[in-house]
Amino acid sequence: MPLRSFTVDPAETGERLDRLAARRLGTSRNLVQRLIEQDLLFVDGGVASRSYRVREGQSVEAQVPEEGLSPEEIAVPVVFEDEHILVVDKPAGLVVHPGAGNPSGTLVNALLNRDISGGDDPSRPGVVHRLDRDTSGLMVLAKGEPAYSRLVKMMSARRVGRVYRAIVEGRGLPRTGTIDSPVGRDPENPTLMAAGVGKSAITHFEVLTEAAGHAMLRVRLETGRTHQIRVHLSAIGHPVYADPLYGNQVPGHRLWLHAERLSFEHPVSGETLMFHSDIPKDLRSTAIGLDGTFALW
Image 1 (tube, one colour):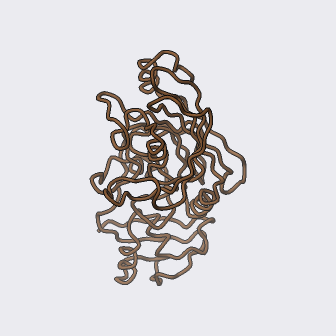
Image 2: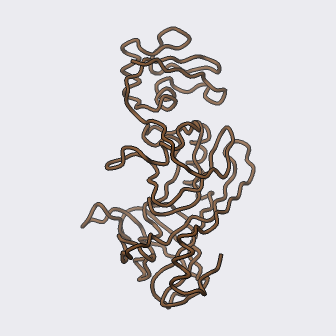
């Protein structure tokens, strides 16, 4: 088994050995605990218990079997990066993290070499929120447990600003509106989400323009449930254009949804950070194809 190692960072002082090692080694906590029990994981050359609290500068070495995530060469635009966080502009078509049917080729695989980490799930290190495969735009990821924990708390407290651009089907929407309806697993089809069940979900929207039987919206998330924007807009009769799950599939076109703005306080420095992502060329072409008056970039 290959020998892998890392040095404990100052911000990681006091963390449990098993949790830290799982994150830094990109493997499961259960595997790390087995390595500790089998004397295959060492701290400064000696054995330690799974609940051992590490200190800055300590060296952790482990004989880890070949499994878990692997970094891959996948182009992802980086908008901002420091030692604590990473902000990227996710391309459409890229799944965020490995899962059933997507063991590799994900955003996580693309960013492993940039030290993303944090959280208890080794398949999604540093991931504090997600975008659907065919949704493009801004995401923030953590590079360590302190940043991860603080970002998760900020998300829960609704202190992260997330603004999207969308084109939806149909006319007659009010100029502004709020959709306040729970979102959860569809009881009739658990592979989909549905409005009216599950956890609280709130979506705000503003109509920017209308043309050709469609409307361009600016959408702000107050909560962040799976497929929230798509489910909410479909529930009020205005599904996102080319949404194959909650609207109408359009051959040759992808879901018209883009995460264009992201704002939050830096989880360590407290500095206010604001980011903007231009509408991708493919979505611009689709909008202009529907009607040239949609060109509101």
